[in-house]
Amino acid sequence: MRRYLSLLLLVFSGILIFSCKEKGKEEEEKVVLSSSFPQVTFSLPVTETGWYYLTLSVKGKGFRWDREESSVVIDAYDSLENWLGDLVLWNPHFTYRLFVGRLEKGQFQVTLKYSVDKSPAEKGKVTLEKVRLERISSVPEECLEHYPYLLGYSAKSLSVNGRSVPYNSLSDLPLFWVCRRDGSKLIYVLYYSNEDGGTGLVPGYLMYAWGRTADIENAFTVDLESGEMWKRDNETKDTPFKGENYLGHPLLSVAPSDHGLVAEGKVEDQSGQLLFAPLILPDLSLHTREDYLDQLPWSYLIMEWEMEREKKISTEDLTDQVNSLAPLNYYLYMDLYIDDDDCQIGMRVLLDSGEEISNATSSLAWNFKGWKRVVLKLPAPVSSLTIKNIALINLSGDECEVKIGKLFYLNDDFQSFSPILTGSELNLKIPAGGEKQVIPLFQFSLPSPQ
Image (cartoon, rainbow, N blue to C red; front, side, top):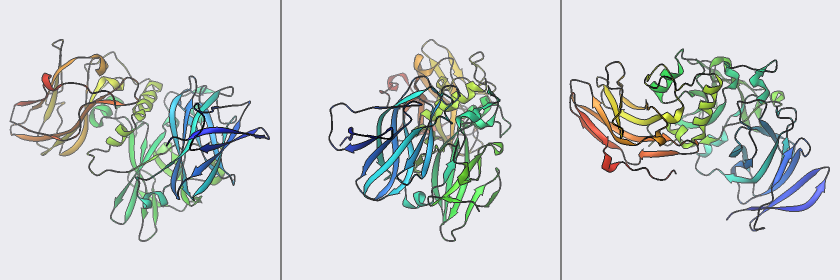
């Protein structure tokens, strides 16, 4: 049942206190936070003991995370004035999640403060459309018990001496954690908005090779038997974690100089930091790590904004699949399984206009073993094109077995993706030097965006 916010008409010290009821007015009360009305307190019902997110549905005007003059920062505190984290509001129409830990049945009081010190948009404002608690029910208890708190950056750190820096790693945001079990160990995988040159590869090649410019790192490990913990200091070395705990959780901070890895956090560094990491349950039936990005399509929008900010996106040469990066809604995305790394598999897309786009050459075709996310760049946003058919081509001298787990493109608003092929796997045996149509014309129809 939907919960509605009703004003208790209790005002003291400039703070409004709201309570959340099962039934309320037909129209929800909305709260506008700004430098002139900087804080509001909510009392939210905890219907049963468990682990929770605080979720905020907001509306604003014009702010996005990579424009330091327009972003807004909100701090959250519990009834004991413990700092729960802060949220950089980077999208004016979005629902934000903040991990608030394990709560007992009863009432949970949270105070949200407009941070004048941390908000570059000092005269900005944000409308809280809905504030509620969301119980985390699909994540294993062990992943939540050891969940690391992550300190990130303030929005002002995106500039140096008041000027925007187009090529810096400070603007790479931690997007979310994924927790997975490996024997007695829990491994927390951190997804960052951008690889930021850690591989030495150009963004166009990163996109072609991995279907993303985001960075994915095994950042923190917990041994459930010994209790030992390790943090990933660089891309090859784990070192023992000897840092602080905060509210019962390990405290980490991002380490941008190490290309998206972590350092030990300090409680006194709370001010000006960012906690921005919803936890996602790993599903072993998913085929690629990029699948988690698909569950949160807005992560592609942040990837694109970062590439725009670094002036790395271009629509000038859309025939070059490798050396230039197009807007991310110009790509077809596919989860592809190849049974033998001696196989070379390419894709050809035939448009209704008769134009063909293909990577079926010896230098561009995919050759690997197992599952991988692959992409093909098209000459315009995919939503604007009429595709006649899509085929996979075998450039090898032997028959190859392949599987397709997913084939999709991003909608223009980056809030969802449109599946061309999804659900059950498509298994294909492609003869040597032959091809198989994946999506013939009579099969090709786009469902409504999810």
